[in-house]
Every structure is written in C-alpha cells, then in structure tokens.
View 1 (cartoon, rainbow, N blue to C red):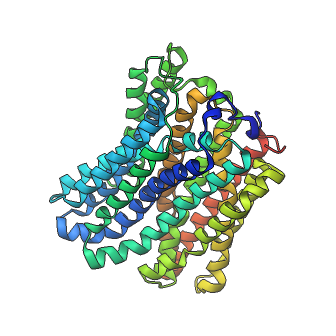
View 2 (cartoon, one colour):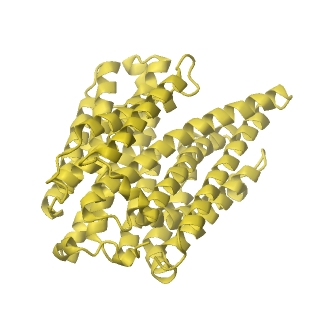
Length: 478
C-alpha cells in the first residue's frame, strides 16, 4: 500500500495554492457541505407542515426525502468521473449553483409535484458538488497531518450541520413557515459560490483526453438510482423492493462487465486493486449504515422512551458533534502523524462499537445524563477518529486522473450504506417491538427492546469494518 504521505505527491501539487488561499478554498468546500448536511435535517423537521400546507398524502410525503436521495446517490459516481474529465472546480461550482437554484424553486413550490421535482434537482446539484470535494481536499492538502485536519473539518461540518438542522429546523418552521427550510440555502449557497470562484484554483483534467463511456454512465446511474429506490421501498406494502432490486443488480452487473472491456471505462476496475480504496469504501458503507441507523433510532429512543421533546432531542445530540469537533480538529492530525491512519481508524472503530453497545445496554427507565450522554460522547470521539482516517485511506494512492471518481465512489458508499442502514434498522426495530408486544411486554418496554436490537446490529457493522481494516490494511504509519 502506498504511504499516505506520498500518495498525493504528483506534479499537480506543485501548483497548490498558498496557505491563505487554501484556507479560503477549504471554507468554500465546507460551506457547501454545511448546506447539504443542514438541508437534510431541516427538511425532515418541516415534513409535518409540508403535509398540511401543500396537501401531501401520507405516502407521497416520503418522496420529499426519497426524490432527493435517489438523485443524489444515483448520480454521485457519474458526477465524480465528470469532475475528472472537466475539472473538479467546474463541477463543484455548477453543482453548488444547481443546488442553490433548486432550493429557491422548492421554497416557491405551490404543489406537491413541484416540490418533489425541486428536491430531485437539489439531489442532482448535491451530487455534482459533493462528488468532487474529497478529490479537491486531497489536492489542497498533500501533507498527511494537514490532510487529516482537513478531513476532520469536513466530517465535523457534516455532523454539526445535521445537528444544526435539527435545532434550526423547528425554529424556522414554527416562526417563518416551511419555506424557510429552503430559503436558508440561498445565502449559504451564494457564499460558497463566491469563495469557490475566487479561491479554488482550476486544475488540469488528466482524464479529459479520453472520451467518456456514455453507455457505462447510463448503466451505473440507472442501476444505483433503482437500487436506492428498491431500498426505500422496503417495508412499504406492494412496493416490490425485491423486483426493483433485481433490476438494479442486473444493470450494475452489466456496468461492471462493460467496464472490464471498454476502451475508456467510466470506472476502471484496476482501482479496486488498491487495498486502501477498496477497504476504505467498504468500511465507509458499513460506518454510514450504522451511523444513519444510530441517528434515527436514538432520536426515537429519546422522544418515545425517555419522553424528550423535539427541541430537547436535538440538543441531546450535542455531545456527539462536540466530540467529533474536538478530536478531528484538535487531536486527529497529531494522532495520525504519530501512529498512522490505520491505527487511528481502528481505535475509532472500537470506540464506536463500545458506544452503541452502551446504548443497547441502557435500561428502559434510564436517565439521559447517566445512560445516554456518556455513550454519545464516546461515539463523538470514535467518529472523530474513524471518519477522517477512513476518508484518507479511501483516497490513498489514487492517481490524479481518477481522484474525482474515487471521491464520488466514497460518497456513493456513504449514501448507499446510509439508505441500507436506515431500512435494516427500521425493519428490525419494528419486528422486535412487535415480538415484544406479542410476548406481553408493555409498549414502552417493547419499543426499547426494538431500539436496543438495532444498536447491536450497528455494533456488529462497526466490528465488521474493524475486521476489514485489520485483515486487509497493514498497521504501519500510513
């Protein structure tokens, strides 16, 4: 495996911008990421108001989330590769502009169909911009310690943005209406565009000389989109997720077969000979499956078992992003330089598994301060160690011509993992809760049993990621 300290030292880095410009460029990337993270939870909080004011049906309301998710996850891989062909700066600016404009369209929507269409376009813009962020971070910060700090800031922005959305969503929706959940993106998007235009340097596009694989692009986009569609149908009556999943699998199989033979493949299969990239993305899929399930199930646990309000629930999550921020922004660079990315990643994974196990062991009549808060703090520390180093490993040793693709692949692993995790946790919690009630448990105890079962599943996912890192990655300082 190529050491991280040498994985990005190519001629392109000689033109890396000076420190001040790099920080401003980082601010542009993080501002866009903040907007994307904020949007997800702000919109989730606004869903009840959207149902009443726009006249959504109970099943139709889910498409406010699903339309965004399908476009986002389905187009990430293609967007990352297009970033290699046309330059990451162009792709980032175009995606940010599309996302911001679509947010305005959503705020002005007068019917459910208009809002769902706007959300789909938002997902398109988010995919275009998010797909190239990791590739841009790797180029901006070739030094291992600086790269760890930048990746930590990126992870913290995602966690803090999601938390801020939970808190701000309720306030904005109650005081200004559901439209504010979309209007808030306008100033943030404009700020990201201004910073990116001024401070992000355009870079050569090594892959541009090759003609893009159009057929491969259609196959992988359709396959991923239908795969996410199948996932969101799990648990819905008459949804036929298995049928759609089979179609998705067939399309993705056809895509892989084409990549093995195409003259200029969209996703060269040689990339997966890079153990860091393959293991990093597999670990990220598992981590996001666990993390998405954790956020959803813990929100339900806090409200339905411990009796917290929606605002109190948002505030109750604060220890996790605080832990992420302190570790990733203050300590992670030093730990990575001293012990190596693999060792830091593995330690973080152990802490994550321990944190969710503590939540699984919490009693039904538990107290937030003694039974939940310590686990959330440990989870924040573990996430602050594991997430940035996993991102670094997934980009380690990737040639400059393929960084956009690798970045898109990383984001795709996150989104697919998150969608799978949420579906698995929801089905598992419902099944265990139903079994508990059938066995004579009261509703509160049955609910708690269902949520506890999902925490054990999350711990198992994290431990599988730990096993992957242990078996496939060397533990030297890289």
